[in-house]
Image 1 (cartoon, rainbow over the protein chains, first blue to last red):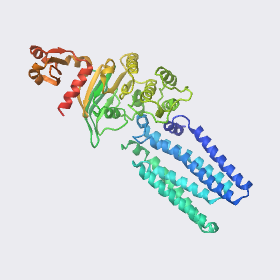
Image 2 (image 1 turned 180 degrees about the vertical axis):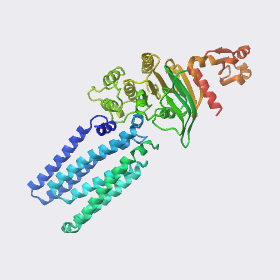
Image 3 (image 1 turned 120 degrees about the horizontal axis):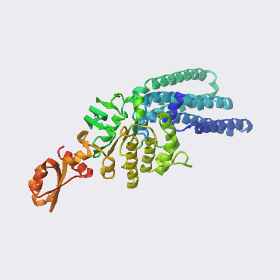
Image 4 (image 1 turned 120 degrees about the vertical axis):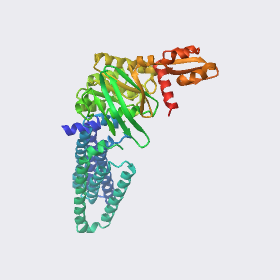
Length: 216
Length: 294
């Protein structure tokens, strides 16, 4: 409850309803897409739906998670309206730490749901790529949130996005060999990204108090 | 004097500005106006006092007992409202009420809604309520004031509460501030900042004048009005009087300035007229004096 309260401090009213609706719509789109590629037996259509739905739903899941986490981090930017309110509240640093943790936990839900439903419906490698990209991006937010310049974050997001896109492209080109080499590589990449995300979360929560009291 | 808040050597340094060595004593049970030009350090001082930013040196004692602004008990007793952007831009009245109830034990939601209605802004029950970014500066300030007045506090610290309000609303704010002090039976106090005291003159009992991060004068308004005089005379007599004036204006026919009341007889001997200043005249004279001596 304490964690939920801290999350609510940074988000205002219960925003879970809105996010819940978005996640439900995203999941529904994945299911409909998955059903369509089974029902309509046309290679071009199946390719189009697979590419479009898996990509769009992956980006949507990441965006929902991103919004949940970045709303908390924005509370510590002097340029953001609300900064003075958050910083005038008792135990602001404690709220900040708890809200980072809670919003991170919440943000994992749409991504995990995307991975599970998308994995079952499409059984396509892009689902794995999008999922690990989402984890990596969230980790990046956790780690770069204290950097004043937004360009550092935007730049690193662009580089990571491009890198994962390139990786997906390479894997797509060599789809035939996918079960042999890339699977091993992918398991390693998954493990590294997961470790990166966990470390970023630990660093973000451990340094929350210091960041809160550091004036930019 | 029983002080609700006192500071000693309070210092906050930035690369291009220093709030330096602030020694302040705010009287308990009164409204204190923090007066200064833009960039005088009023907001910095308020932010330090409210714990939004931390001082580099010096100490503050609140209610004669607390020294640590991070104490939850102390923050519960202080109601603070920033000059602008106090709440996140996307928030509506309902978000504000939720966050305030979460942050403060003594936040009264019913009172918040009632105050919002009185101040003619969206409350929690307003259908299609607008987020802060779609509201005018004045309405944002009204909502923030409703939120802060809906709390049970012992000290209100308001940063430029009147600057974005229309004259009628400023008048209502002054009444509300008076009501807050009256309800407190001498136990509640207010500190508010302003760069234009004219519309809030009735709300101030004690005044603190600031310039370039320093306090240049402070005292009860009535005492300050006794301490200084406004001098008026013919331009021909200006040269004889100007040495005794703290700040002055002169044109082809008349001169006017601020001086210590102790020199009143000398001005009158020169044929000038001395009047008791209003707080507005005192503010302009003080700030001009500080500006000329920078």
